Length: 392
Image (cartoon, rainbow, N blue to C red; front, side, top):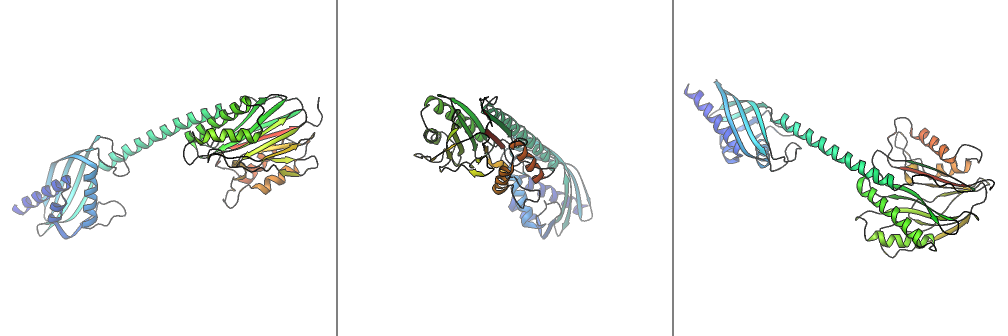
């Protein structure tokens, strides 16, 4: 009987030391070959990992209290039913950030005693379940926060897009914009300019979510303001002015690619400049496709940038395709290849003037390439500007 009471007292002291994270006392009461059967996956069942687990719990919790509700000793084993309380206010534990909330638990422990030392421990309780419940709640709150941010970002991004495509005599304009599951940062816009000219811009901000949406909104607004306030500015001058303003306002490690062109509606003259965006394709009446290449760094990277300009003239039946990298960088189902520029150029070349729109053809080819169940990786923007075959 005395041995049973001594064993129960030893377990009580051991649990008290565990609650206080008193590693020296725990070490004193452990048998040299102590084994725990209740550690987390990946931990060794011996003394050192047990103490590390106790230390980790002690550093995460404060005001730890416990009560032995019932205790039975039989032979060399002691069975204890324990209720406990602690405040989770210090550090993360089991993937759960501190909440400041009280954690309650019920647990059953079995300890085997050998030579007056704790030789083995088995334990099962509710603390892990309660912490897991808090973790799931934190994840739910975080998902809701992210979704709210994305909703706001989508609203900002949508506000950066024109509400309708302009109707231009002698010209056909078609647009397609499909955001990915997360906000990516594509934009396109049209600006009415003086002397029968129209500005056309397509761009893409790095990153996703709110920062990308804000960068898109700022860039689109700056382009419109500069282009319309300084009507005599060429595309390169507009991009240079926008870049200087954006450098001072954009977040670090972010930038915006943008292709900006000014179209003279009567002559078909198109003057363009490029700030690091994928070059549009010009489709000639002969069926040949050529890239509209012009050199220039993305907007917002560094001050003092200048932008090369290129000038072409669109004849009747000729068109220009503006696009974002969400199209060419789409992967096949096995992720062994991308849609790619060569495929895009071939499709532009093969597209006939009397067939369905170029945008529709490209989308059909894209969906055939990526297959069913495709998870879109980035926003896709297509904008086709075509001079009508005959002017009214």
